[in-house]
Image (cartoon, rainbow, N blue to C red; front, side, top):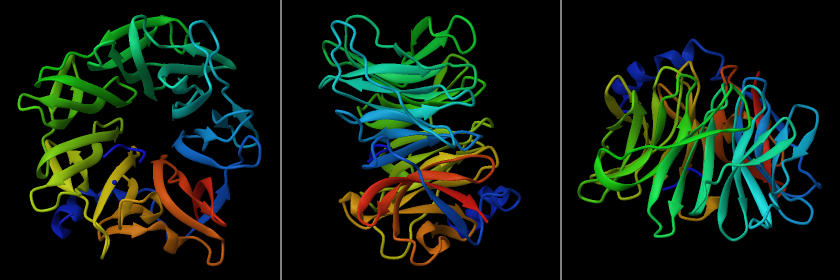
Length: 348
């Protein structure tokens, strides 16, 4: 299950103990509607330490990536440099310098970097498609590309100087026995997480560090995917269970993958974001439709529905939490009066 469409009690008490020393978990949150480019729909995909948000918004004439800097929403635009004639774009990652990464679309994806008002094509030559999903403080970008034979490979793009707009590509070698890989996120020390096929063809979450890809395993099922990591190398994502085909969110820390659990009556969950205190957000789902998701924060007692922690009568239904910063502010996507909107939660 992709990121965008997340503990036994003892395990949670150990793995999530840090959550109660940080500002993240609160009895209530204020909620801000992140502005869209034209007053229509939008979605919130990533957040930085300044509570600036990256995502995608209805634009003119098509959907495009955006950066919300706390006062103004700025469209990234789309790439229109031959042979690219883009129709729309989306932003998936943001760093402390407000650099935004994502893809611009022509029906196929081209990885892009939006930096200081400039939109840069990160798509390597002779590739059929590419996507940029994460960016760290120095401007290193992680994502994946596919060649003309649709062989997927995770990549790292490193600027020639910190936060520059020219750089070099590295394809991350899959040493897990398979041929397919995708990169999802990168931390400030350059560790990367994503998913790659193992020898039997199944997809497993990986942590790439020191030039080597390490298999993070599963929660007992056949597949797992990593979505995010923090600067301590803790990883969150989603994994099949041996007894549950829909899977659960996981935390990988200290060499162990731990089940983050689900809410009563939910059929599955995924974890999408983790901050440097170890606080984790994501969503649970009650069915396959996007509207059947509910945004959650994971605590020592299990996941908590964020809809229970915002003002009553707000008009919001929070569907998916996608990121959390060290101040405990959470970005995601929900329905405001039945219209899809990005939200920003701040602990009270």
